[in-house]
Length: 229
Image (tube, rainbow, N blue to C red; front, side):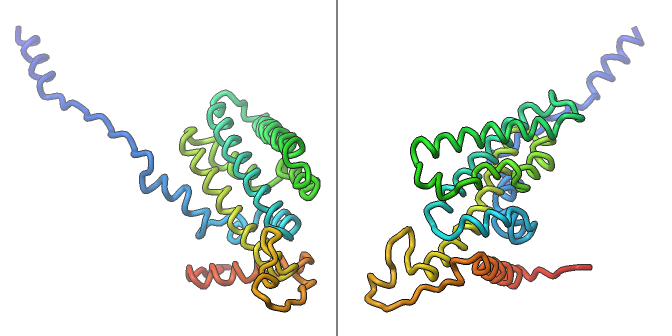
């Protein structure tokens, strides 16, 4: 009887562990997954990734916008797929699986462009295919999607894709405006009645380097970023 009473007493004194509340869909941590790549951890200006496409496809706004949408699509869905499969992927073949997923999504994007936006597809040429080797996409799969849940991986991919996109769109805006006096093919200076001589430097990749350099300078000045040895 004493043993039963002792067990009852022990049971009564055991504290019931409260359930951990579910994290809000847009908690502070999750908001940072999307906001950090836009500024403080931008893939191009801070991580210095994806520079090749930022130089090559940004002569005009239209192909640049298509490229931005393509990269966002690929990185978001690649993150989602790898996150869902992360516990099933053997560690020794994870890079092969990641490349296969990215390649499949890029082929899908390429076929859609050729079917419905053939002119843009010709302008982008091989650079759509080079999304497969884009370090931003591979980096997010390896650094984040392989170790996090699908929803967080989607937010991370979306943030990185948007961070990449706004930089290349900003570069394309200035290159097309000063390189050909137009934006999305609309003659800006001509419509304002201003005489403007097209700047050949902006059509060259050197112009893209200059614009990216100015964006990096402005961003680091604003954030107070300092390189540490």
